[in-house]
Image (cartoon, rainbow, N blue to C red):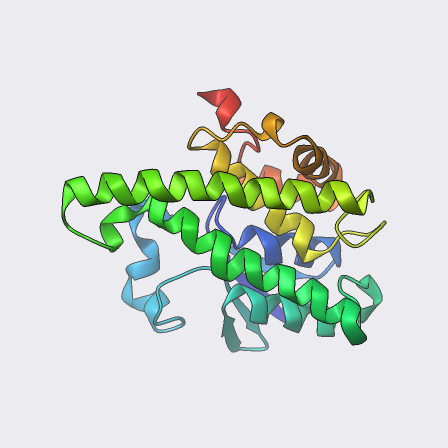
Length: 216
């Protein structure tokens, strides 16, 4: 089998997980139980010294970092037309993907794991509160951009990595009080994305709920 994907349920590895499923690729999903620290075990660190998911293995060669993986899969399955191929349209799509990965995602890390940044408990609470407010601003920006585009998905009529990442980021926000319903355009896109058969299969495999706010 050409591909294997190391993933954690509900982690950002959801994005390439969706792409592989949408492409109809034969791949081996390799579950890591992140809450048990399996990403820090020597066997996995030998594959990715960063101790993070996702990792895509393609013919025995490991690729980490979500944007690199998405671009590689985009090249492997050009018939899927996940991203524009040239010009300003491609640059703009990549700009949004990189913003999700390098701005919104790290903001969530400061909420979810403030202990990574300081051992002082009072400072951790301050970091968490500050970034929780900032995260809401990020979700609002996503909502406003999607509303302005007025299309079923980020790039029109077809699924893209931006849709899968938006679903992931919205779900994360819902874990800490950001009700997805408060962002109607974003939430509608997330629901459309979740309803796609390939995405639904990944949701079932990972056993995740999309709106964690409703579960609290």
